Image (cartoon, rainbow, N blue to C red; front, top):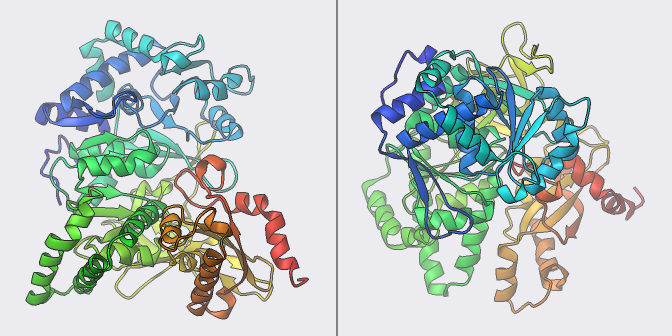
Length: 607
């Protein structure tokens, strides 16, 4: 267990406000929250834990004065900015339920959440968000009554967040504030997370203080971190990963959150902070690996050779640890030398030389990406879980890991594999069911308490879970063979020029693929070969992609092999709808958008 912090009450009675009160009392002078203003990229504004609690108290009074009552959901569509983070804590202190909506949500999804939640207030960032939400105020099927706009210039006549804050300063009463948060219990709803989903309307997952605290305690037993560690907070708070990593765990650990409002600034933020921990979904780790590979490709051959040799030493060292064996003394010495003289100087350019904990979740991690980082001595601790399990359910740890797996269940949690390969889970952090619009719960567990996750996987003899794919995304060919698209896609992406891939073949006799060039590696690869203009159109690039597909097919069985593919010109992203906010493929969207291309791939032989 890494935390040495005081637990202020029995763990089965803990609430988030109780932990924040502990932080203000025990660690009041330590930094809690830092952010950069849009017009000031050089400096950080920082609040200590005592200042955070005071700000939360003022905002709590402001929201109460605005009519927000215990048990009511309050919707928020903002980026990772202090108003969002502090409002989340403030609402919790008056027993209200903060709910974050993805900034990339479509109007129909926003309307569904607004209608389903019964929320009367939404807090939005600026003019763009206000224009998305304003039509709902006139929709008789939506209970929404008011909008608060954070950015004054985007208010458009709507009430401003600054006015709510001012009202809170005027209305704040210490006794009322203390009484309000102490009236909350561990089984009260802390938040509702609407799943992003790859299809259909988002489902509402209610999470209690108890389930979050239990998960935090279980994680703390396997995660080895420095005290009051810094965290770069850049994923959306609508996702359970950042809600845990960026709000709840920092309050639990009294750590230091650095808000990163622009995901494009994550790399520069890491270079500035040199963090001890870093979390990224697989696509983030892929992009970072591609950036490093592109930089290495520009180095002189002698330097590249030295880095490759050091990487081999690091991977050998990791292999011993993976087997649970102590590396031989000579290997330990060689690894330390390689780290200090070769690998850490390279990692320092990305701000990663001080990392002691790195993790990933959300989707299967490509094994070649895991091995790439292992070559720098960085073991990405892949984890697995769902919104319905309060995030992490299984995880690797420095003392017990298997590269390519998603680890073993946290203490007190159980899993088993159903006859069809579906992963079933049971335990205290597993939710009871989805929240209905009328406030009741649609029970999701069977009579024995098991929840079917929709994921397919296997458990090895040592208890490690290996993911295959989502059950609903498995391809069934016309010959009746089952194929995991993620397995094939990750094999294709082992080539550095292939950044994204979608495999298709349901109901067909063979598979085809849509491929997207990696935006980081491809320009460097092309420049090294004197290729100018659009790389996707150049014969040398297309020949290399053909070799990449051929190499992938050589590692796949006949049913999994790609017979035809199309190289696309544009990268997929959340903003254009092909990826979820957590950067997973929205397969139905991509298939619909490229239906003619996919049909043409099968029409080439008249099939």
